[in-house]
Image (cartoon, rainbow, N blue to C red):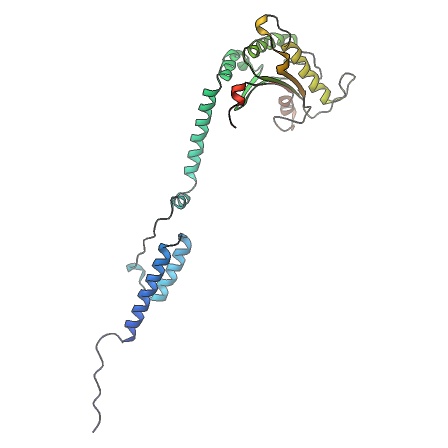
Length: 258
């Protein structure tokens, strides 16, 4: 008599239960790894896609919410626009602080408003010093260290302002890169130093007692063409580099950290 076959159980095969348990454990393992690691979004999406294909998960019914990373990473994902905005705000704040810490600069700008408009001189304000820049044109004839008579009243006005503001004074002469060799000046070093010396002589020759400047405050220097403002590429740039800088460093500004 033949043996009666046992009826097959209804439903999925028995091995599917084991496979489902293993898949659940693997998913739990990867979730834990994800929770304790810093997320690389691009790599995660690639691995997630591979796992979906391997486990046979339908993409339209499976959604993963990525955990938020540290604030620094979130800022990186937003792009670079926010740091630019912060930099602009910081620049404005520094400029406002400089205006508060440098009343001397504000005073000099006000006193020489007419000369600035006529471009007879320039004023540059740095955190630790104020530079009154005298261009060659209108101050010295070409190749000469003799001051133009028309500029002497302006230089006398500068002397009066410097007498009221304490601090060291450096008078620095600068030239362009065109060599000079005359009976008076052997090189641009001689010319730049002589022009600085000419300005110093006027600063130390007061016409009134209230314009007196202690000579111990003043130093004359000649730099030739070693410190140009702009590259010596054409006639205009060379003219800009031919100058004398009067550098005032008030003690209160020098004490400020850079």
